[in-house]
Length: 144
Image (cartoon, rainbow, N blue to C red; front, side, top):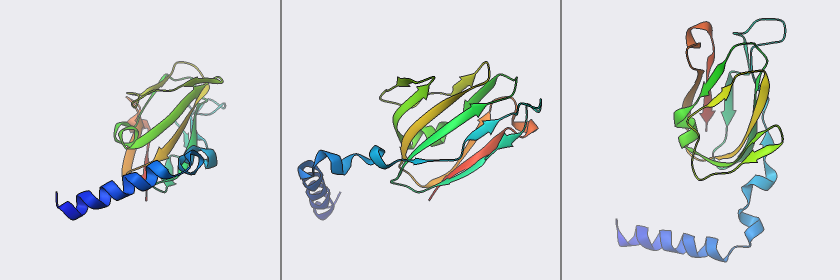
């Protein structure tokens, strides 16, 4: 790495270290996204509402993934989960905090899981309900 790059990174780190704590908390201004809904209450277990989602890198979001169908849904988005910073995962008003991404989110019954995060890396990331992709249970989360 060039010395000018190192100097620039060091200067950025010093500026961030001296910034007020509230200035760095992106989660305070999160945007609620439309719910990503798996199945519906009318008995169509393989319909998806809001299957394609667009985000902006550097912004905080809350995405509620809602299972309304009677299938077991295993929600996978491995590359997307890898390239976001998780603030928390909320299930029935109980919060999960951690240092890394989950492998997947699983719904055995209807319910919802809210994921609060900051989008970090631009790209188009696939999500899918494992084993149900051919029935239309897949989509894309695009970070610009």
